[in-house]
Length: 322
Image (cartoon, rainbow, N blue to C red; front, side, top):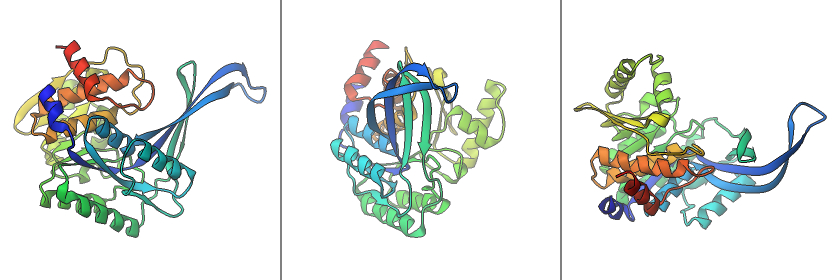
């Protein structure tokens, strides 16, 4: 594990995807509203954190990699807050492309007594313009020549069109840059021939249009997905059950979770794709890369809100579970 941690240092990773802000508002509940049977929460603390693809970039930086995030933001105060957080965390802001009239995605979580009461999302999921798409492709073309890895974080917020997916994968293939994808619903099967494709169990089930009634159904669905995607590795996360690794040339691998206490799963998927892909880019075997990601996920699940795991924390988790 120590050798792997040394190898990931300063790896250059392009993170292409939906940039988000996470707002956390903490307060106290003292009474019920006279207007409706709902609690009144008196907010006494507010905090902004990076979410979505921005959180992937932050996770990579925490692991010692050099992240280059590329995505779209709006022109309002939320975009300014995102850029401020990027600079505070020493992340490159050049890849944040503003689009006129667009909202910067923000997810506001209101909490009381360390429990989430409600989440409010403000976002724009319409497709980006062709001009913005071309600008993004220009950013990718400029960075791909020196990149060690491409991570695509698709949250279905209007960024990853079929054209952008296709052109990005062509650039990566031309420059022999490995690709890891964290998908959602739209264009699920458009990510052809990537190195790592990482849906969760529910996403895999929904995109195949079936309900897995047994492990045999699950494995059959994974085999079908491998055939349709032609990816090198299909890595399926399954909550408390850990993760499963499928490939065309080997039997399925199951890695149980290392998390002892799951305090909050916000952003855990971002951490998994970051650690998994980064470890894989060093030449590590997929099982070792997945174990590294599993320990990283265990660390962040023990923290409140979107969080990161650094190498020391991952190493401590590894030593605990040896």
